Image (cartoon, rainbow, N blue to C red; front, side, top):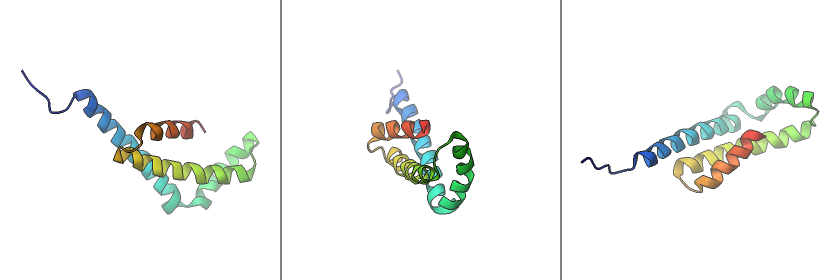
Amino acid sequence: MITHWIDPVEFASLITRLIIGFLFCIQGYDKIFNVGKVEVNAAILPSFQKIGLPENFTKVFLFLTSWIEFIAGGLLILGIFKYWSIYILGVDLLL
C-alpha cells in the first residue's frame, strides 16, 4: 500500500493556485511598473471608446484592474485570502 504525504487533489490545487497567482501577479506588475499606464491606456482606450465608455472611466478601470491583478495574484501565491482573491480576480476578468 502506497501512502502519500499529500493528497493528489490538494497538490493539483496547490500547483494550479501557484501558476494562476504567478500569471496574474506578473501581468499586474508589468502593467504597473514596466509598461506604464500611458502605454496600456493608449492600447485599451480605442476599444472602450467604440463601446461608448468615457475616457475617465478607462483610466480608473486601468488603475484598479492593474493593482487588483498584482495584489490578488500575490495573495494567491502566498495562500492568503485565496477564496476572496479568486472571486475578485473573476470579477476583474469579467470587467
